[in-house]
Length: 209
Image (cartoon, rainbow, N blue to C red):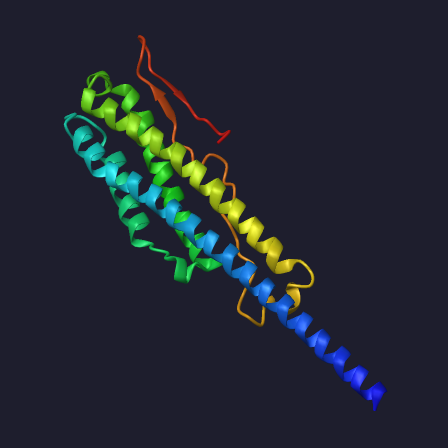
């Protein structure tokens, strides 16, 4: 009887330990998952800020009578596509993130071509409204780069929690799957820095962000 009681006590003790460990692991996963979602919200807000600047940018550029309409059309169409791809924290799947990134990269490319084309229009380069919008756009691109990096850091931390032993044993059962962050597409997320000072404008594609 004593041996059986001891065995029962040991089993109960192990069950309590496993329960405590499971609850602790689950809470940690929930915490990291919420951090990922919060980081994603910030990413979206920065991309939306960029999208909000584009209509004024396009309207300002339209004031240049001979400006290339094809370049403007590319920006308008790319913005429409980018804003149509909405990914909420609740549908933050790897496939949806990839679609979002592809759409935003197309918009980044269109904006880059627009800013390079502006070099050929001195009156537009001297336009105070355009210069102000270009400065705001550059600042937004910097914030986007920071937001993307923060999101990727949150994803890496979350994935470590999901994959590490012993959490990996029950993470999948509880619905926690590894996530993907933004991939590095050379130059795709970097709008050119356009310097309108001096006699000749210069365009610097910063690929270090």
